[in-house]
Length: 183
Image (cartoon, rainbow, N blue to C red):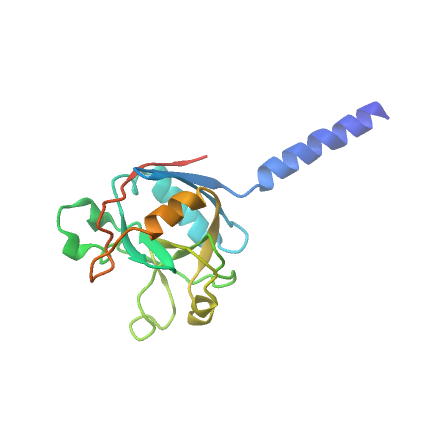
């Protein structure tokens, strides 16, 4: 009987460790943000994000856009250069098929994309993502793919979201992703 219980315990531990969603930590000059990805509801986005993280793609990019009371946005490789006018226009050169299932709640992590007229399939940008500062049901109706949620570091997200911005919604302070890794 003891062996049977021990075997069930070991199998349960193995099952839950294998089915756990991947997590990513973003270390910025304003603090850390830990994100749990949703591999079940957004498998393509999760796989892509993990690949970019493991390739070091995000290191040196900035959170280039703040919409006060709504979102912070980052992940543009062009934000690494000294020309702020091109921030928000770059990506990986590919898009990801829409996986629109999850709601835009406070702390949700979602993919940026071009507008409906240019992008009727609602395909996501290959690298740019945003984090919700509050529940945003209007973005659910607009059709963006949510692929994760902040599980630690919302105070860092809020700090970034409270920075003063210019007319183009760029923060007056560079918030650099200094280290990004799978946890």
